[in-house]
Amino acid sequence: MRKPDISIAGGKAIGPDDPAHSDVAALAIENVSHSYGPRKALDSVSFTVAAGSFTALLGLNGAGKSTLFSIVSRLFGMQAGRIRIFGHDIQREPGEALRGMGVVFQPRTLDLDLSVTQNLLYHAALHGINRREARTRSDEALSRMGLADRIGSKVRDLSGGQMRRLEIARALMHRPRLLLLDEATVGLDVKARAEILGHVRGLVLEQGVGVLWATHLFDEIKPSDDLIILHQGRIIAEGKVDFIVAKASARDLNSVFVQLTETRPGSEATVP
Amino acid sequence: MSAVIAHDKSAGFSFAQYLTCMNGIVWREGLRFVHQRERFISALVRPLVWLFIFAAGFRQVLGISIIPPYETYIPYEVYITPGLMAMIQLFNGMQSSLSMVYDREMGNMRTLLVSPLPRWYLLFCKLLAGTAVSILQVYAFLLIAWFWDIEPPPIGYLAVLPALTLSGLMLGSLGMLISSGIKQLENFAGVMNFVIFPMFFASSALYPLWRVQEGSPMLYYVCLFNPFTHAVELIRFALYGKMNWVSLAVVGGCTAAFMIGAMFAYDPSRGLSRRGPAGGET
Image 1 (tube, one colour):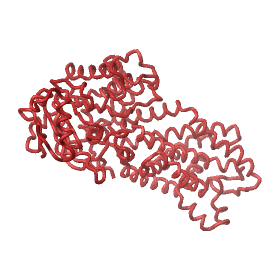
Image 2 (cartoon, one colour; image 1 turned 90 degrees about the vertical axis):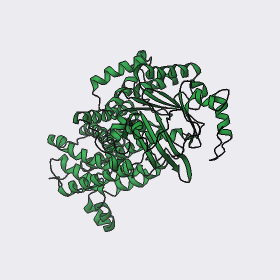
Image 3 (cartoon, each protein chain N blue to C red; image 1 turned 60 degrees about the horizontal axis):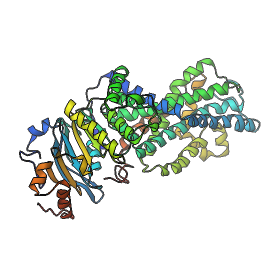
């Protein structure tokens, strides 16, 4: 397994030789590689997301974040490696694995012709949740995401921020213990971004949901967060943000990122 | 094949949960159809134009002899009604596939595919939902046709339901199989022209096969091997409370073959990887 250049003390990185750790992880990714023809989008990527933690996946456009999300959510077939969600291998036990995971994709995936509630009920049905239970959960999820007053609205009448909150509410309908969000705040204004991030962090603190938050925006990451930096399909740093910054002897995360990515044109690794 | 199907195994869902999922997919498809009134109207207008205009013009030109399942001479409108019912299902099957390509491009399909239930089951439910919508259209067409003196026996309205279900599944599966090979929405229009029109015209929908045989023996064999011909005949016989066993076997076999092919061929990454999984992001 290719190790990241910076790793948190105590070792968050996992591999086939560390099954005990990965079994309890919300998400365990081991040596995942993916290519589009000759172009390698992911190269031996390995990391874990602990249950009840907020982990940021930072990378520029084209770093491989969305490819990784597509593989984890089984939209793409796995070419190499292994992924487990709460110990369930997504290839061998896809049902059990997907049952524990909610996903918010970067492109909008809501049905614009349906109402807010209808979108949630549809998602609930896809998870085998009966109508009565789905209605209860729908009300809860909409209240939590501040959309209780938009229950009967058509989705196409919502603002961009409200649509995103609805997508998060939808992803929570089956009460997953792991939530993946791919650039969930792209295209939103500052206020809407802060609200969404606040809601998601609230889920981690109040409900113990493990979150993998893919972003290319530094201001969405706090010093206490777990961080994975993905660059050109490879993990170049991993650990607590403040630890990574300290280890790189940099001013802030922005400086670390520039330092790591600018000295790394291709597969050349330069450890600060 | 999407490798995921090969490795899918039950995740311990109950029968009720499977049923809930199926209801949800059918309900959503129905809602979408109701919200798209233009789609409903155009689905009805197409066969009605054939019935009111084409059939009226050709009834004096094309004489129909007594052929099963009919027991007497029938007007041309009566003859082409089962063909028009099948045509509704043919267009609907292709349109459902079109919506799958559209959903895949717009990302809505992801919602379906991240469900923990087996992917083959999700696709089957999607096919069933499309079929249910097509059956609604067919019955709406039959209602209007009744006022045009197209009056099959009352039992026929019920007897035709299983035939419509089977033929709807066959045509939907065929559409899904075709859409599996399509990377982007724009390509589908061309495929429609190469599938829908040849299937419809090279069948018994508009003229009985003995007439075709008189005109062109080669075309007769093309029609005979066209699964759409058998869908039309299955519907025709069922509408009069009778069974065409050969057509049932052909439609049943083709449904199974197309469905299995579609489920193996369906690859959700197609159309996503073309421009990266998220419209530019990789």
